[in-house]
Image (cartoon, rainbow, N blue to C red; front, side, top):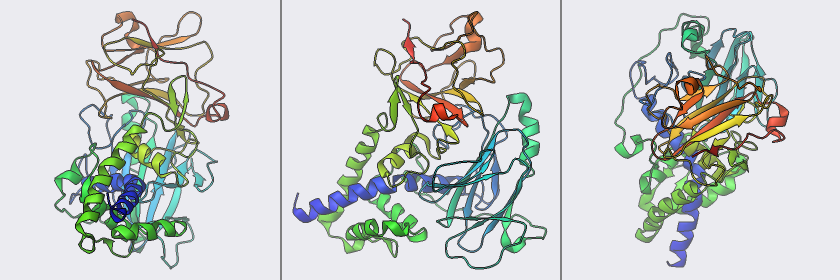
Length: 448
């Protein structure tokens, strides 16, 4: 590889890793908002899509979903004016409205939580309220009865998560969700009719979620994101570096100004950078008892772009640790990858469940990052599971296997696929000893 080509290749690898999360978010946005009206799986920009049922293995829109908090999704475009969000009173019910900028940095959260990591605006609002989400560079006045939230980018993704206490609680939750409103500032104090959205052609490669975008198409999409959502000022040096491969906030991606060798270097860089990201899927984070903890900079990545990319591949839209932690289990106590050809248990001694002010759950995912079809239609098990059985000594054992452990144990059974899988143990509003890893989840034990 010639020096000029090697230089372009090196920069392109960095650009691919830097922009991976933003590209995955933009791909998701284009698919979910490519509709004229709200449907069960799509919603126009600046409108609300309420999930009114529990997720199943048939849902393939967002990787690593959960069945604890049926999402409400909003993609905002703040390029013209601020958007006004009204939130009803949730009382004691757990909920959160996390705000992600175009690069998936979680710059604000509204919910039950009162404290958070540096750099995140945290608003505790159990009694609800009215909020104005403002894009960069906007000038103007706001109503006096709204709380201002400043977004670093014009594109914002909100994934609202409210707790549902099983299927019977869904009607109550749906009624609460229907009180959420979203409208532009220009409609303040007026009746507002939802406008029709727009539909456009989406490149099949862009629409193939779960499979990373490769080659020049990747850099073209990243360039479009950068052009519409400027990089942070402190990343100007990176922006100058990326401009050497035709990628800039001024013009997006310009392949026509690059020679054939440079274009070939970008093509190769995308494949190699993808391999770097995937090689770190099971190593990013802190590993304890073979659980990989999402503590530290998750959600607000503080320039750890590789961690941001890994997080986007495994769980786009991950919450910050103060809101929830997501220890991931890929490996058993024999230091071997989890596989449905074996049987496993996860046992908590009496009084040793993870300390939290929210709740906990264990979810099952196949190697494609989605829920796994099973005869019970059970994709997660947690502290709200009806009939969860504790042993006589107060301990709790969960059975993780493909076949039933027996009728007397099915209440504690999380079904697996026949092949490879992984699990995520979510702890919402974790207490300090969970965040600092003084509390440790027990290992997943192979029992056959």
